[in-house]
Amino acid sequence: MKSNKLWKRIASLAVAAALGISLVPSMTVNAEEGMDGYVRSVYTNEWVTKEQAGLRPIAVMMPTDKVAQPSYGIGNAKILYEIMEEGEISRQMAVIDNWVGMEKIGNIRSCRAYYIPEATEWDPILIHFGGVCYMKDRITAPDINNLSGTNQYGVGGGAVGGAAFYRTTDRKAPHNAYISSSGIISQSNALGYSLSIRPEYYNAKHFTFADGVNTLAQYGSAAKTANTIDLSQIFTYTKSAFTYNAADGLYYKTIHGKPQTDGLTCAQISFANVIVQNTKWCRLDEKGYLYFQNYDTTEDGYYFTKGKCIHVTWQKTGDYTPTVYYDDNGNEIQLNTGKTYIAIAQKGRQPIYY
Image (cartoon, rainbow, N blue to C red; front, top):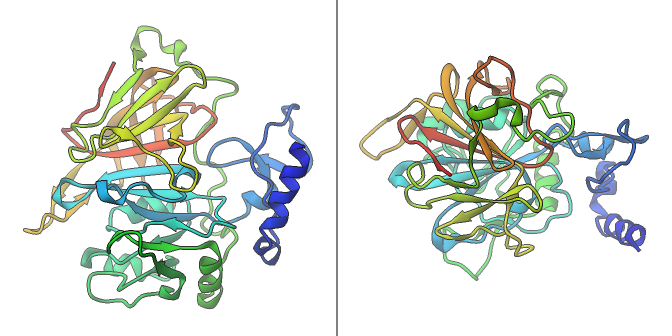
C-alpha cells in the first residue's frame, strides 16, 4: 500500500517530468550507506533522490502578521529564518527544496536587504512581493535570481516574473498574494533562471550533522535544560516560542500564543534544531528600517536540540558562504537530522529557556 501511494504521488506531479526530477520524498533507508540513486540532503541530512537533491530551492518571504496566519507550504520549509523588521514585527523566509507540485505557496510578502545574505547561502530562487530601497543594488545584481509580485525594491525595479503570482479573495491585501510551482517554473524559464543547483554557487556542505543522535550529553553541565524556548523578548509581536516533545524529539512552534500551522496540512510546524543567532544591528532611518550585520566572526548565540541548549559562536564571511556554528570548545556543532529554525536576533535581546 505504501508503495502504491508513493507512485500515485509521483504520477500526480506531471510537471516534474518536464524538469527531469523524481519527486520521491525523503525516506528512511535501512543500510547506512544508502541505496542507489539516493544521497543525504544538504538541508536535513535525510535520504533523498539525487534528482531531488539537484533541484534548486526556493526561498519564500512569508508574514508573521496575526491576520495572515496560517501560511501555505511553510511546513515544507527545511530551513526557516525569522528576523525582525520595522514596526517590531518579524518576517519569515522559508527555504523549500521540494516545491514542485505545490499549487499554493504563501501568502507572500516583501523582502528586506538583510534576508538576501541568508538566502544566498542556499542559492535559491528568491520569491517575494516587493522590497525596500536598501535592496536596490543587491537584488538587481546578475547573480541573484528572484521573482517579485511588484516593484522589486521600493518603487523601482519592476515586477520581475510578476506573472507567476496570483491573489485570492479569502483575505484582504496585502495578505492574499500566492505563487504556484507551475508559475515558478514558467517564469524562471522565461527569465533564464536555472531550476537545477548552480555549481558555481552551490555549497554541497552546509551544516555538520551528527552521526546518530546528538543529545548534547557530551557537554555535561554546560548543556542546560530547554524544554521550552521563549523568544518573546526577541520577537515582541509574535512572541514566537517552541515546546519540546520528547516522544518524537522535535520542537513545536507557536506564534501569537497558538500553534503555528501550515494551511495546506493544518499540521503544527516542528524542528529538530533551533538556533538563535545574536547579530549586530541598527536602525537606518526614521521609518525604522533595520540593518543587520550578516557577516561577522565575533558574535554568539544558542543551539537547542533534544530538550537541551548550549552556547555557540557563529561565523559568516561571504554571500554564498554558509554560516558556521561552533561550541565553546571551538568545534563545529553537530546538528540532528531534520529541519532547522534560525532566529536572527537583535544583539541585546535574549531567549528565555527552561
